Amino acid sequence: MAERATIARPYAKAAFSVAREKGSLAAWSHTLQTAAAVVSDARVEQLVTSPNVSEDQLVDLFSDLSGKGDDNVRNFVRLLAKNRRLALLPDISALFEILRADIENTAAVEVTSAVPLNAEQQAKLAAALKTRLKRDIQMTTAVDPSLIGGAVIRCGDLVIDGSLKGRLAQLRTELSN
Image 1 (cartoon, rainbow, N blue to C red):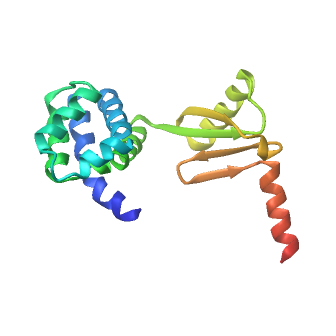
Image 2: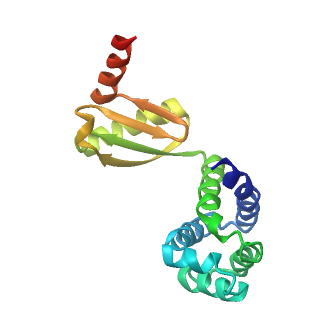
């Protein structure tokens, strides 16, 4: 996994540099996310790895599926196709989003709770996280009844497990030691 990220990083930085220079971070972000979703499809994955499919065919396919975009995006996809790196698009997209979040001073936070959070709870949680992380928060929520109670908050490498399931697992570990 680390190898893929190592290979994808220069491509993500190059795409980010061009997008920032052109003032089109959001457009590049959308295009890369779409292209990453496209390449993740098993049928497209076979085309990407096939030696019988030409570079131009791959570029046309990705241009058609992810929108025409600007010439810089098309050239970027062409470079990836030429170097047989299209399969790295999910990694490139993820790294691009990290760079974008850093420059825009935002943090993508995923909150998984045992029960759905209402708007007031989400607002309070977002305010607390904004204070702690010193960034604007883009929060997504999910429900996992197996947590029993509480919530698990993920933001990059930071994981805050305030769930009852997590506390029980911690208690079990302490008792077994």
